[in-house]
Image (cartoon, rainbow over all chains, first blue to last red; front, side, top):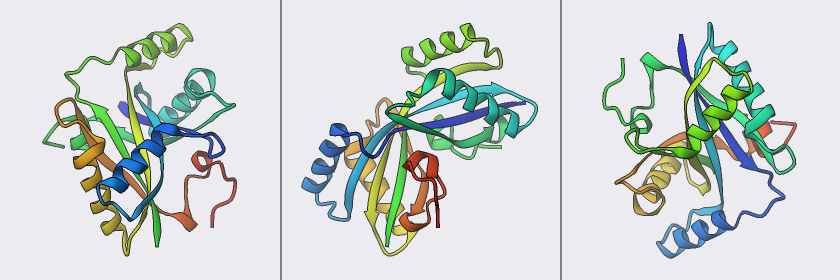
Length: 99
Length: 99
């Protein structure tokens, strides 16, 4: 079974995020007064072949620790594990149909 | 009520993703044979002051359409809406406790 595993990688709160600040100011200029403290991070979507969602999560966490995240400045978390033939995020995957 | 709203912004599948390819090859070298087709995207975390989660989502979607996402190359989706005092993602927020 194949899964999309999404890993969010975020700078620690103490680390400055100039890109987030720039977005915050741009949103304010556009009239979004309700928005504050914007942060930008990256996510990585792995396609993992695993027997079960928890096995896919373990592989993704291992990959994050060994390669993807910088433990000094960043934190990571697995945010979603989606069986590929049953995606509930059509907008992100660019599909309009979901099984 | 304040919410963290996470917006995932992903390149459309047809757009090449060299950073994802590089990660894919690096993971393969490290022995992660179960992982394929890796993609990298960004996410933006807004702190939104709204009356309800659906109102926070509407603000985030409007911000994505007006500023954050490039509709030609990217798709976006709101992936999580978390009341700030009840976060379930302590790893990402750098906290070890959650209410």
